[in-house]
Image (cartoon, rainbow, N blue to C red):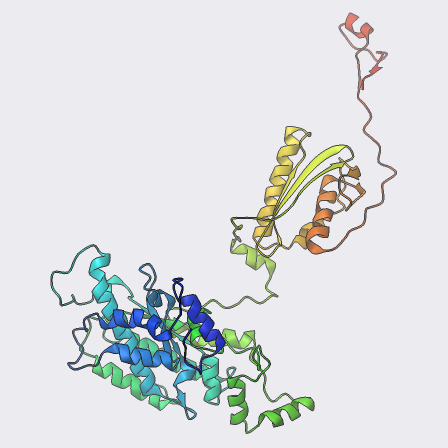
Length: 482
């Protein structure tokens, strides 16, 4: 593989995943040429000034500097995916200042490239071959033609000396999101309005200039904007935190300080050695942002984004709220598990389990083959109900707590499984066995109840004298039938 020497191993690994499996050496220039040449081969948009240089050179430079890269659909030229670009915000910070004009120019280049691709490919997607070389003007009624996603917001704030969990940081995120939306919608039928940004006048000045330049154009196709989700392209750009998410750790996986950590220490006037000394004294110079700050940032930029990744759900969320949405975890195509044949008090039971990819219990089947049809049907329905609960997120611990040591017939000695010697019911054995297999918790046998009596055989009138009379009397003799 041939990549720039300043690129990290994670970026090189992401390039391998983005590259089609064709074998042979991998060169960044060759792989990037697939989509760069595709964009350069499309005609310019009608409003593009004469003498505009090809976009491929600028796009290659932005990729080399890890400032902007195409998403996986555009990189692989996937006809079923939506093409787009991912922009690394921290790459536009120079000498502690955000390069607003350079950022706006890159966004405009990305928007023009996506619209050129759409104008060139639309006739082929609709089944109509173009009659002339000049592309037909784009129609905004066809919906968005591309996607521009921002990434590495927290590292950008760190380079600018801003805290993620601060009003200043949220104001900057709102301003940069609004500017991105304004550039993507400029020249469309529904342009975004210019905004007043007193804390960042350079962003406001750039927004006014872009709005004035395309004020007379209304035929461009819209492009959606937002923040990225974790993926291969974010790794290719070597971001510290995907999208608008905070950086939860101050150190890398290799134990070194992150670039954002060094930037925040520098803005506080601290060296790494001074920060270490404060930490040893019990004073933490930096406090990573938490889930609450992430939610506040998400809410702040939401009005200016068409796409936002879903917030991670806290582990303390109420289980009822999770199940109320009806989200059911699908079973894998090939499932692991085990089958067990046992006997409880002389009554046979077949138990089968299925597992998710992580080895946790996904489905349960309990079948008593020699019981009545009603008992078999009820046990089958019960197994299906437990399986649905497991797939919707109910912990196995709750089922074990509810049904272990349940007391009803058939009960008695367990044969065929060493996990139990005595069970108070079939469900008692089944869920204690599941606790031992999937929770690693062995549950002892319940003490046998001395009051349990085997059901006595029925006493029926079956003697020869009973056939001689048409009516039964109190003195009627009974014969034991077993």
